[in-house]
Length: 72
Image 1 (cartoon, helix red, strand yellow):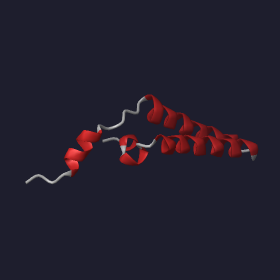
Image 2 (cartoon, helix red, strand yellow; image 1 turned 60 degrees about the vertical axis):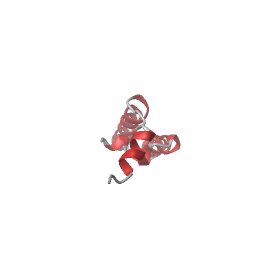
Image 3 (cartoon, one colour; image 1 turned 60 degrees about the horizontal axis):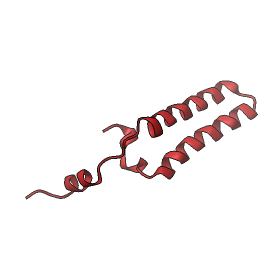
Image 4 (tube, one colour; image 1 turned 90 degrees about the horizontal axis):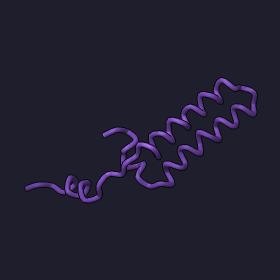
């Protein structure tokens, strides 16, 4: 399992929030006159968009429940 497929990121609002925080961080860095860190934060946002929206495939709910149940 990759980190972007972690169950924490299953709800859409959490993935959107991570991207939004990175973009807001980038805007703050550019506004305060530190474009180097702004570009880095923008890179984080771009990578998050790539991982959370382009490549993201939600896990099967039935697969997750069968793995959670103990086998006798």
